[in-house]
Length: 343
Length: 149
Image (tube, rainbow over all chains, first blue to last red; front, side, top):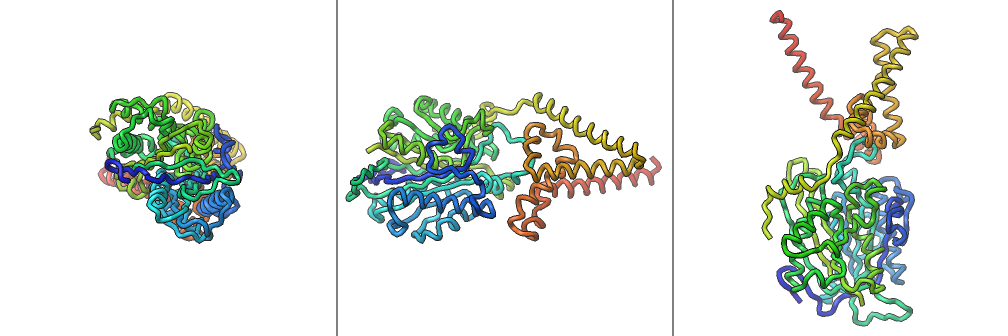
């Protein structure tokens, strides 16, 4: 059922039945390092290039997710997946061998939100019984795409974030007919989604992604409140993707101006996955893998155990390319929201 | 909610933390001084061994470049640069790093399209405009001598 201006409220909420996350060594040493399924100490993932490494990361995460669910690739009708690289090559080369019909997505670091939004709509509408949503990022391949060669000596500004090497994958399926035998308790249900719009504040500093994306998060969160006629108190947590310290400050300031105090319930995956002080990540973690891995390793298990009853998961993305940046264009942001509830 | 975009940029500048300029300057001053002192030691040593002033200077530069490239390859240079900043980036050490690091990064794309095309991705502008500027200044100098200044 359509809700408000840009949301969907599911008549039959699809359920998240399995989730897997694989991260790199730095993430594994972070505050929630023990939450992930695998920590890969080799940044190359046994491959020859960073891009191949990220593809391998996606392939492996998809396989772990399938095996946790006790499924084979043939059981998945569609795959919704993406990454940060140009032409999303990490995804295309990573998941080809699974032979699952695929929608390749690009929503910058909001890709996990976008893939879950589209995946749950597809399942909710009855066009698929079971889909997989996945997103990844790799520190080295992202640095090379958007910033400098790894060995180049430069000083990162304090507002900059550290791209997470990680991947998260979830299986979303229709609740009807799902068997809870053998203790297969679903992780959560998706009761609604809010699709975000491109928010361009004419902001141009690509080393301050938090500030570029914060207003998109504000826009989507407020839209979610309006569309579903809810207040922040309806959620146990409102979880943004990778706003970092600077973005969190902006988010809290502007939502407060709109009359909502989010300080107590806001959580940012980028601030959760790294210890900014001791891991030298400055403003926090970022990348598609930041929200994706945190969702799968940290958020969904808390919904499954009912520690949290209802959360709003809002991955945030900065929509720039190296070319648009060099041509002096601004850095617009986007954020997609997924309403997750415990079962 | 309407937010004026020009005001947003000013607001962001106000809430974004920045590195301490005083601290960065101090680290750069000290580390830059150390690099230059080391260079001076090498040069004096070479001169003491009978090298001419100019030859000693060139060998010193080559040694600094060599050390920077090796440190870049060992992933040590950028760790030093993160703390020292301009202290190691402004001397020739920084230039060596800016050429060696793309070479390492892009070797996966091959000798021609990888290393060949992109080795000067960072140093290229410095080389191009440095050459242009020295040409322009040389012309001015030549005009000055012609005019008897």
